[in-house]
Length: 504
View 1 (tube, rainbow, N blue to C red):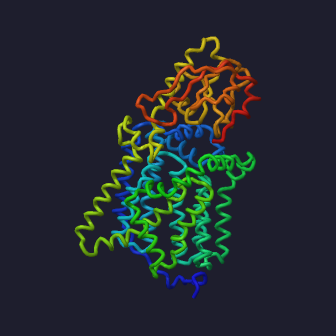
View 2: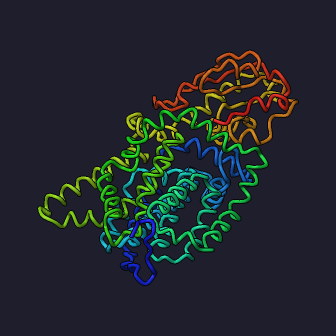
View 3: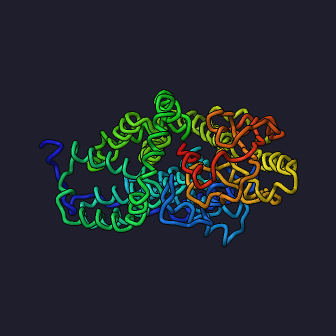
């Protein structure tokens, strides 16, 4: 019988083992405890500073994202405080839930108790999981959504019960309110099903019903994007154009490094198991989804982490053969090697993704994870800008404007600049929030990473007033940022504002 034609009835589908509830929960709690303990070190990430301000401008959409992450940021800060630790509670909970869902995926693939525990442990040690769990970002909640979607997809394939299309649609709709990337794994899965089967799961009215559920949930943001000329497509196009070549070159190395190089044998074993094990033939579409997704991401010039979540599914699949390998000959040697790999995974994942190093040593990890450096130096940037602001004559300040070149700078000045007036920026959704009034005809304090004469020309004559130093020699994006004093806008702000908008 051809692969594309095979079908399994629900009567012949395998059952699943009991779930290792207590140990898996304990691992998830341990992850939450570690993330909570470290959540107050360093400081806000530039994206988090942006989400703080976006949370005060809640809407159905933003230039560069749907509304869910700013909403969750708002809820977290309201409940737990407007601090890095308070903001990051939702990220911590998301990471803990991801640990549990990956263990459930392992169980769905027939993993026994110890293999489920190992799946949870591997997830807890994975660099990408810890990194996204430490920070509030769209990727944080996207990862959890992908894992839930993978779980429902596996349940659909294993049971051949079309009713699972409904929770799949529900989860997809919620995920689309966070990030549009969720369409990529779903497209990869659909292609894989068309190649390997079982195509029978597509021949049911539950499929369009699930799509309808997803569409209804996602509709508010889609309508917002449509009525604002689809700015998110402009942002995505800019990312691909600016970084596409670099993303393609670094795709494979970062796939190996960002989850953890020590987990590579586990997810390779998982792929082989899903593809070769007769009892798991029904799960082949999930295995094939990963290489298909990699091809899609490479073709579009997307970032390497876009495909990383599906590697966690392969890790879940690989824990059972990993335990089988450990139980064969020369067990002592194999277990020693595995224990050493686990320790190295924990150490490297923590060092590269969590704020465990002194700030002065962060440069060591920036080549692999530049996001570590983006949590350092914001108070120093604000102090530098504030000192320049105070250089303005007192009689000019009512007419003056502080203008930031990107949303990280603007967010930092909004958070830490108690002596500053309202800070403006043309970057991403900052450009959609009210610009300065035309009565602001005075000087402009312009914060910019690099001097761009064409952009500066909007603000008259600009001179360097200060350079930003984070005090730790951390080589992040804002080190050396220029703080310029400019004579004033060349046109009324209302006329100038469209020219100041930046999408990337």
